[in-house]
Image (tube, rainbow, N blue to C red; front, side):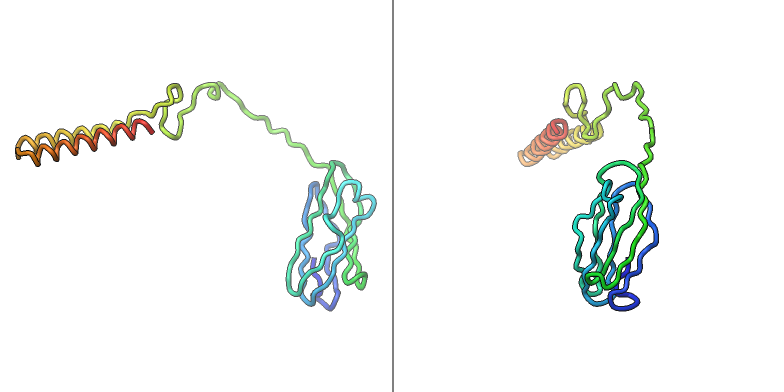
Length: 179
């Protein structure tokens, strides 16, 4: 709905509106600050209500007003819109229809009764993480290489380095399996 677009206090609204659920009225002010009064007639008020009747809309701004349909049913009525305390008034025909119920069945099969794989890699039955075989294989290669190099080079420093590699692989494997 446009306010103050053609002239001061002017209103441009749709002639008719149809819905089956709650909706919002968008007040678009193209000019000076103004007050907009919204009112649903008796027929509409049986199914719908407006959060507040009076709304101040700042210069060159927009404001949304919620109209809540609070019960199911069908009705036809009028929404009254007035600017600047009645300087300009328009009526919109509002047709609220009963919501159409769609029956979309939910398909359930036997696969729902079986344990599903977990995204975190744990076994559903035990809660223990599955062994990350590629990581374990890489760790064993690293340990074997460290031991071969330590035996070939010899000396305390080489064996100390091999021990550090073995310990690091053991810790990494324990952390990966225990997650």
